[in-house]
Image (cartoon, rainbow over all chains, first blue to last red; front, side, top):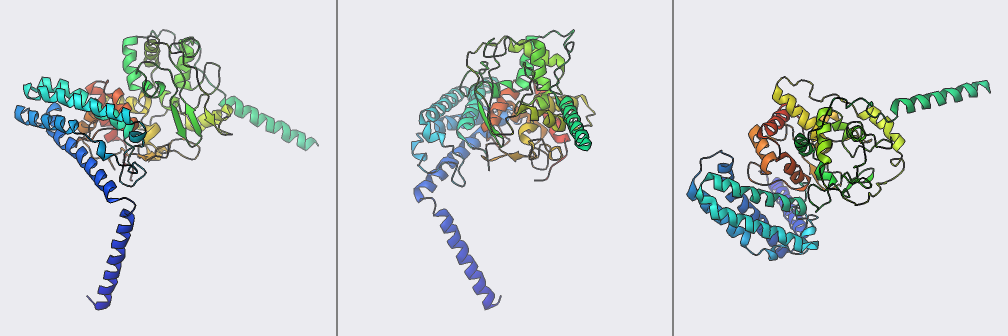
Length: 158
Length: 293
């Protein structure tokens, strides 16, 4: 590679980095960390729902230990205090966020949804090791809880 | 002078013919003869047609059809009416024939055109037997005394007479999937194109609000301008038929994200259908042409 080209690439990279830094500069570090944390939290729900959902949908064979572990994880995740996730200025108007403004304007309603999930996952964890039928029955309310919260508090994909 | 008179008469004839062709066309008075509604079957039709999603209040119970939800669009804001069994504020006083005309012909009890925010453009393909069952079920639901609010539409969209030509152009009863060779696909087509009215959100519209059938289920901007409604043809949706059916049952995607927004409402309805019906919907979605993103 010629020197001239090297320099051109270096300049381009520098501008790219500066541009990225400028774009990211719209969020404070606290805002970005809160968004990362809450989205990771959602990933953990999804990850632990995987084995349980697969069993409920008869895609994988029921295994009591796996089911009980995943359900206990879900219940633990849902019981965590998440208040610090909702930093001002990180609603869906920010690129990468799908958190509806209602989480802030209707905090009580949002908290009620979170409590509903905590109750549904606790009920699931109580029976997930007791056989497939018991787990299937307790799984329904968990799905409904995901749905009703997403319906009210998650913005569509852009 | 004579020339102008001829032109004037001709213009009146054209306007008159236009009005005549596009005037509201309720069902003929004998359309429901011999049909008796079965409310138990109607409950399934009610779920498949998604009535509660729009006609209940945002946080009201799922069986009180009080109306009141608002729907933003390019033409203004529509307000869902009270269709509960209340005889004054709801439709309890309407005859079965009047209700069926509203649902499949988009004609109100007063004989005026209804706005296609109400998806009679899909329901017009429904079996009248199903509609009679649906009406029988709706009559068993509680009455709400919530008064109706007017739509908030700008001129000329607030002129209901303009809906006549609109219907002439965009409301027809042809199936989009013409070729449905199996009972599964026939059922799936019926659930998607008629009762489920999926295309009303998942298919883009032209400037006049008619569905762009060349891009059937190809995804569309959200009418509220917030986000996009996804392309659900095979060009964009790689889920298996089983994945689709499971999603319509529980709301969970194959990687255990879950449906949100309006689709969470839809899943409440599709969750009440049979596994066979959900499988039929999935088979239909695999059979329609892919629409490139």
